[in-house]
Image 1: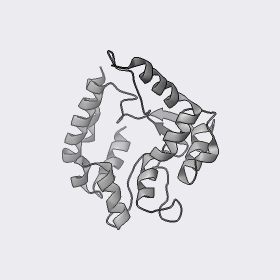
Image 2: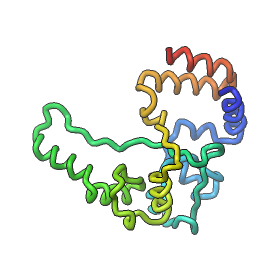
Image 3: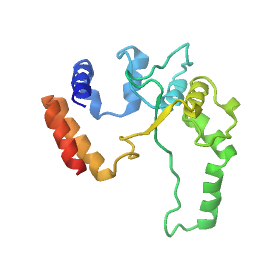
Length: 186
């Protein structure tokens, strides 16, 4: 952990820290405009870059973050039925559609994400998404949950990590960060 934090410190010395509090679209816009070399982003960046007229392998490419080859970091788009919804029957039908093959195949290529379903129509996933679907389904790929999106830590612990991370970016004390995260987990 400490070695990873030291490497993270080295990487952060080469980043635009002002963008750390910004949103992902303006960060990708810097890459598109040539003001940044790369951005660490999820599958949905594919759909955004396509709106900029870029084509996978011609206008942009992807590589695994260092040390993460054959690791797939996931989060799930979730649609829910709120308690007291005014039209629960229609909402249930919508949820069934979202989870169906047709629903997944309509939503995911537009959003720029892979389907959770293994029986999706792979022909609908082209360019970057074609490669991502293969990686997602590969038995040799290690699937891990996203910390940022609440898959591996509850909201309270995730907020504590974010607060501690903000302090770490300023003071660069890897030991202090590791101790604070460990203390927050207990």
